[in-house]
Length: 347
Image 1: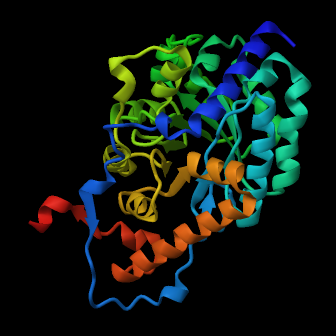
Image 2 (image 1 turned 45 degrees about the vertical axis):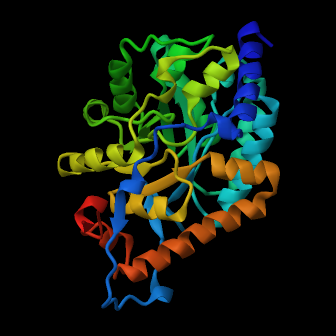
């Protein structure tokens, strides 16, 4: 095992442990959903038992528009967690994002653990994972991406944008110069859809336009309000920084990026501090095609079992059905039609 691979393994193991702590969440910044309220529809004719959530994730049909977000990879404990999460995703027929595939570019001895996800998950959509810093550094980016895609038979490739985390990480690589040109090259040469995802500080609309112009087919806003990777890196280093509460709230990212659908065709994914069922419902109402979560699912699998995670996701959508009934919506598209307003409008 190379020295770089050992360093990555140690760091990823720390990430898993710290991310499970409530201390790793934002303190003052919220996801912003508390500023919105659903409008109660007294004359509803929605039949709650007729509501379904089947959706299409690029070329594959899924039972719920929900993604188990990529956690972390490159550590022994991460491989076991990702396999257990694949069991959850298969039980629900939903997409799952794998942890970081970076170590496979350094040492192919880790390939077996990634290949097992496809074996366990069957035909579910699986999302690959590579960081922006690795894309910028790569001298053979097309070969590297193709290798990672083939490794898990990926249905989409997620490029993780984490400038804040890289800036504060002791081993960080905050040089993203040339990133957009590399992404444009990838999307031009590779048929597999590319999704751009932040890691918890949110994607702003200007960046979204640049990413869409570069050819990405999905935007996962991963806004502020949930797991705070800036704090995790500061916890690792023992340092403090005024940047510990930096980020764009998830609701802001959704509301502004949804407007881009007038000019671009892409999948809009909401993640970042989604904890309660009403957060997920408000995400769909603000324009999300899919929602996604990492920490709530990770905690359930680690502290309880896979069944607890399955039940959590099923119960989320049972609650969303109730919200749709009370707002007079037959499907999620209806939920986007003026069913959610700013709370200030009630006064």
